[in-house]
Length: 433
Ligand code: HAM
Figure 1 (cartoon, rainbow, N blue to C red):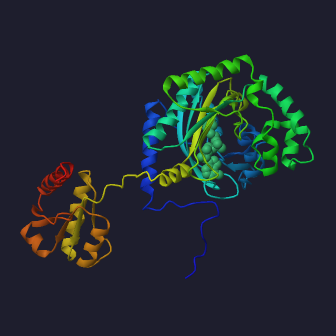
Figure 2 (figure 1 turned 180 degrees about the vertical axis):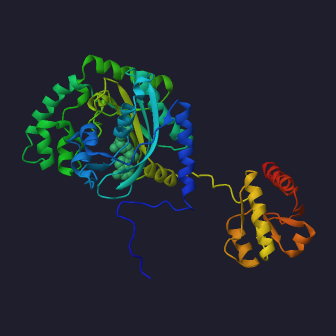
Figure 3 (figure 1 turned 30 degrees about the horizontal axis):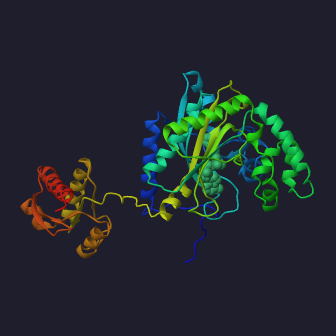
């Protein structure tokens, strides 16, 4: 039989046997975010298109080339979010969260959509974990945010991931820098791609992250933003670095990092690795002091980062980092006959109520097939339940690993007896016996 369709190019499925890896990583991120005071925000997967064209920037690759934009039946232009920052900023503004005391700290897990050429580590639907903090211009906040990303990598036992930081200044120093870039790229007008030609006047900094190989080559010798920083931005950058030194976080200053989104000001940073091929940036972020104002709010200096979940998981796999397998089924009850099936159905319910994990037959299989299934799901204990057991009100629990058999009553003592047997086994394992 031929399938009527398959997944869309550039998308990925996470299957039941793999999802525990995502859950493990997400749990660590969630805990780490909480320990820094971040609370989760959830925003819609689509937004009015102007949020991204204004927020992310008209002249960025993301807005010019990569957005999934469509008109609704009501004639509104909407866009699947290409990233999480703009939606989170819109939501905190819209709900007056920024009037309730600053700083506001929000974390998120989002799916994102970018129409890029798919390759290893570059998808059209991908997932990000991100942190956003609103209402502080203090450089210690930049350093703290970077520490949060670093501690997530540390907790996940990721090695060889390098922090690269830069400052791209504020609108004041940007003016001078833009002038220098226009002069420099102006010499290559006949060589730049069409998109970059149009950027030359409007936003020459965007030429620096063009993906065309020819433009990349030209960009190599372009003036560096760090040579154009005003005093305040220089001082801010200096302070961020000294706080990072204080926290013992290692970094390299990379003056070529400008990031591909327009909202950034001052600090920008990326965590990069050589382990996963060309798409080696696992995390990117920085300060965006003007975004809230751009979206119609007051001046609220803010900052954040996002990590690509797929790239992170790919990196962990490449580094052979073991992710603990999910806890196996504690008890499988194999019923024989209708009466036993009802009893088993009731008993697994009790086991689940006690907080343990239990299964019974739901596909009318014979005993052999049931025991094969119990093996496959790694059940720690099993019980075979037939008419005899039901008449006697007693059955035998088998430890699937050791083969040890223990009697268990099927009346109201069932749960306490099972928990005793289970706990004994857990203790035996902890003691390494
Ligand atoms: P970004 O650098 O565009 O920044 O994306 C952040 C991370 O998402 C990247 O470092 C990468 O790991 C992952 N990523 C991006 N595009 C793809 C793709 N096509 N396929 C797979 N993974 C991808 C942002 O999105 C900003 N909103 C980050 C931020 C938050 N800045 C401040 N706050």
